[in-house]
Amino acid sequence: MQHCKKKTNSQPIKTLPFVYYYLPFFLIALVGLGSSIYLAASHYRVHTDPTYSSFCAVSRAFNCDTVSSSHFAVVLNVPLAIWGVIGYLLVLALLILAGRQQAPKKRLWPSLFWISIVYSTGSLILAGISTLLIHSYCLICILTYLVNFSLVYYAWFVDRRFENAGLFMGIVLDMKLLWSLRKVTIPSVAAILLLAGSLIAGMPPYWQMEPPPLSDSLPRGVTEEGHPWIGAENPTLTINEFSDYMCFQCKKMHFFLRELVRTHPNQIRLVHRHFPMDHDFNPLVTEPFHSGSGKMAILALYAQAKDQFWKLNDFLFNLAAQKKDFNTRSIAEQMGITSGELVAALNSRYLRLRLKHDIAMGIDFGLTGTPGFIIDDNVYTGNIPADILRKYIK
Image (cartoon, rainbow, N blue to C red; front, side, top):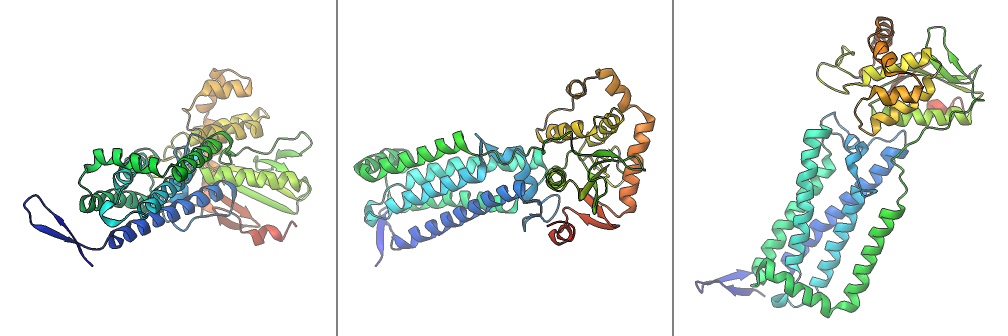
């Protein structure tokens, strides 16, 4: 059966039954919900699973993991993806209420329009952040942007087909409808507010990775080539890591390996080497990238000479993760020395040559990025396969 709506010029416009408008909107919202659930799970795994890499981490420019590891991926102590899940659940709840009315009296499309406008505005802001600050795009995030824009258009389109009040006055009518259904809407709104408040107050900050404590009982030293090591004095497994302080995956893997060392202190030795992906230091990097990581590596080498390498190593990883400006004063305070000493260290020809040697060794091993791991002359990039570790530890 077809329904007609008259235009002001008295020419009728034939419209399809309401279900043909309703179901596509519902399905688009479900796609958004599914995408947000995936992003929330991916965000968790990116920060907790050292072997995880999402299917959309395809390049430096298009990498969901890079976007997830950014501090922009968390707002009000809650991952953005979870806010997305809540938003799409709200949209679907309103859709269910809208579906209860008869077609000529359909309501809530103005409300759905304005909710979609809010999320679409957020999409534009996040797209700008990805372009200007993160320099990488998340393919699934782009899908959610398209979903949000589609919901805006579709809500406007359906409202035009079945409503004459307009998108502003329609909000007033929507509120009247929701109040008439208050036995359903009030508990629903209360549940959403309670959920949001609970998340803001009690969401475990799993993205704030902290290194295992540095126990004085855990052996540490320097290899014959001059590289700092921590762990077993007579190891069954020696892992040489090439790392960059501004590389999120480097930090995640380093802290994971340090935990392995802590739990297997008589079996595993971790040897640290520097491979900053800084265009001012690394010949493989031809354009600005991880600027400042080379200077951080030099300061870590200086800290090694002061027998403070592992302490400053953890500090530098966390400093880079917080996206704070490179500040020699805060680093000097951490080491208990003067800023002048650190400035002199940054200009030290000897330390620069040592860093250059580390980078050259990484290139000789065939590394093109970080983190890189050398085990028994075998090279592993990004992470170490679990079956390799199982050969040495239970």
